[in-house]
Image: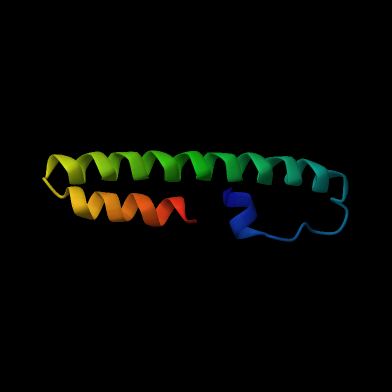
Length: 66
C-alpha cells in the first residue's frame, strides 16, 4: 500500500513487476474494505451503547447505500 501511495508509476525497467503490483493493489483493496467494515461495526456498536440508536441506524443506512 505504501509503495502505491509513494510511487503510483513504476520506473522504467520494472514492467515485469507491474503484474505483481496489480495483485498487491487488489489485496490492498480487500484489506481496506475489511478495515472499513470493521470500523463501521465498531462505530455502530459504540453508538448503540451510548443510546444513540437513531444516529447508528442513520449511519448504517447511509453506508448500505454506498
